[in-house]
Image (cartoon, rainbow over the protein chains, first blue to last red):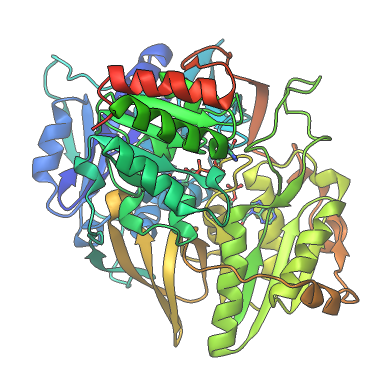
Length: 325
Length: 263
Ligand SMILES: Cc1cc2nc3c(=O)[nH]c(=O)nc-3n(C[C@H](O)[C@H](O)[C@H](O)COP(=O)(O)OP(=O)(O)OC[C@H]3O[C@@H](n4cnc5c(N)ncnc54)[C@H](O)[C@@H]3O)c2cc1C
Ligand SMILES: Nc1ncnc2c1ncn2[C@@H]1O[C@H](COP(=O)(O)O)[C@@H](O)[C@H]1O
């Protein structure tokens, strides 16, 4: 029988939401395989988090070591390899967070396991596990299977496996000794660096005009600033616009940027990558202008214009000015 | 400091119209333009900047079919000292694991203090080769890295977490760092710079020259396989506003007015 493991992710002594989504996925797969679900928590002072996990998981394996205070991939790989090695066939599930991106590839090699990252679906077909992922700029779906289904690591796209608390009885907590010795880690956490604050706070804006790579390499920013002003909104952007220093980082919408919750989100030349959409919360009216009819942004937008934003933007501003009269 | 940069040559799919090929396991690629994976452009730039600061040598390497020579030559023009092109028909169908193995085998026999990759390639979206390669070489690694400061025997950098938060990290060398986009501003390469490296030799190494056998590469050496690919059905999602740019803009302005989108 296959064992399903979920690795609990934490930061600053708090379990992260990705953990609960991984448990939701673990429950689904464990159910389909008729397998046991175990959550693994490697942390410093883990008791509070372990109790929370035991409410949702039949079994929790806990290792307490100060080296796990932050989610350090060097420490985690060193510890998880011996912990999982002798437990037979397994599948390990984690959320595809920025910390897990750091961990999963090296861990899969250390475990001699196959890896599928950023999966938004997990299915068991004829007893075989298959995952769903997106490839080619998130425009194509692919079904991935594993040659050796006995050793598999998968990471999950946030939001793909909604979690609901289970009503069952509390699970067991088993403490195991830390496999880490005294030797220093090769990778050492120094400190957190907080996000830079700017003169606008896009997180609290109701109307957002957001710019993507489609605005071109040397954009005339006046046209966009003027549209935002006419709409009474603020300018935001996708990651490449910050990368090119067109706008400062505090304008970036997305998982590694700012989370916004506007009423209206006008996306100009943005493809709609998951990490961008992941930063748009609430359920705003999303409107997209993009010249590619297959751009993923049109799957989350309510309205779209397929066309050149450089033609649409001035026309739109002129019309809005007319309507405001 | 000996720096190795891994670079991927990928089809540019962000604006192209895509179609599934007859085998059903990949898209049609013959009509697509290829280019360097955007993340790797930042990796080569960072390598050259580190070399300019502390001295050393930059080697670029790619597992890619013939056309990728263009990318490798451009990297020489950007300031790399040597470039290696790893290709053999047997490499066809390699997943991230098999690619990592090829790269690890190549790097193993060469001096390396720092190995730079991109965090993710936009074709497979795997974000896996950097970390796998590191594990195969027995080295520590980190992804989403910026602000790289090499010091004696170690390196400090920032790692991107969520919501604008970073963690500052120190790591022993040798190490693999998978860079984040935006950590530098890649330089412009002039035609003159490209011309200057036109005569430089870019060795092409095949399976045997890399030092692996067929069972270790391609689909045989892979741990995952693609069963099928498909385009998500069209017509899900947005209502597309038709008409000329002016007509569409006029309709959009009305929608915005109705829905309170004009503040
Ligand atoms: C760990 C991680 C974290 C990330 N965090 C973030 C994040 O916080 N925020 C973020 O945004 N991204 C983030 N990304 C990057 C993300 O994956 C995408 O690469 C990025 O969002 C793409 O930005 P884009 O849509 O502007 O560019 P592209 O994907 O290049 O899209 C440009 C779009 O513009 C369209 N276009 C081009 N010209 C025109 C024109 N003239 N008129 C109309 N349309 C046009 C094209 O059809 C295309 O759809 C992250 C990635 C990773 C791996
Ligand atoms: N075929 C390849 N040749 C050289 N480097 C590669 C190759 N594939 C991936 N890489 C490197 O690994 C990074 C992550 O790629 P991936 O794991 O495919 O998302 C890329 O940004 C490259 O730096």
